Image 1 (cartoon, rainbow, N blue to C red):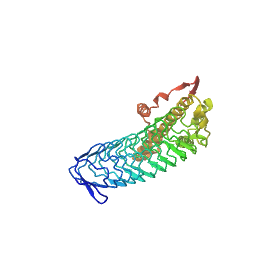
Image 2 (tube, rainbow, N blue to C red):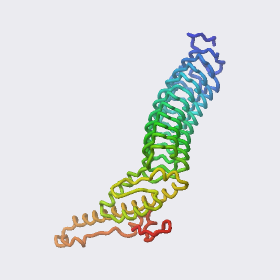
Image 3 (cartoon, one colour):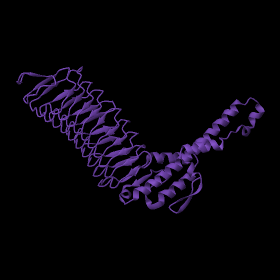
Image 4 (cartoon, rainbow, N blue to C red):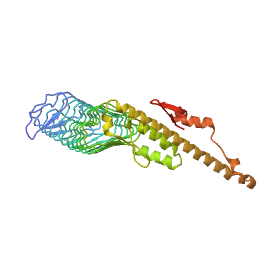
Length: 397
């Protein structure tokens, strides 16, 4: 291979030593695995040509690190793995095309790049720790179905990123995933998400509201710490387990609301089951941890969340309220089912005399069937009178 000048193309076949002054590289179709450090610190490299039918499968660790003039690269669909630090500090890299078939983006693979936007393929892909960390020009990231986990620090300090929508396949956001994304205003958390790790939204100072999906089980310590413009936290279902200082230094946040529970309660009361109001009110009055009045929205004052060990007690109250709501909803649904069976039997009766005796057509759902339904909803345990809670006794039915 000849020495490279500014206008020359360097043909890379996979075995030769790469001169540091290379500017344009064409890959031979026989190159399958790009070795580690191959083009590291080729500071004049501007263009890399990989044929879309190229058989390249892996890009080794640090392969293009510190190629400070490299502006764009399109990876062929044969590439399954990008190694750790592969494009680290390629601070002119603005355009990147990742094709379907990619399975692994290594640790800090694009650390410090100048990417404006990126689309993650819809394959079952693993994104390593800090993969796009300090990509301060990144404004848009498209996360497609198939992604299961947002790795640790994956978008740490991507200060220009303004919005993110997680696909339904993501179940885990690891710690510091969006730490210091100071431009992040909108975050859509998918149903199916189960865990938010420590410091995930730490110092996301532009974030104004967040809706926690009903599938969420756990929020790590200080997850929303210093989100200074966070005004609203909406809980779609059960209150998740929360570690210490989750909402510390969120000065404009006043409450965590439960609009879905409020709406379900109102529907039950309007259907005639007014006794649920007193039962729920009793739980809300215990320890002044939950606020709710008929016709209003159920919420937790955020200052309560900062008291030591208070979250556990709040979660118990919310779980009790959800369970009794489920019971009353099932009770109402069973009544409607019985009425539907009753009407169906009346409609089937041909004898006009018998048809006038409407009570004779009444059909009740058998007790064992009701019990099975209630057990399926995990509320059969509440079908007792006199449940004890905090040394007080309340009738639930």
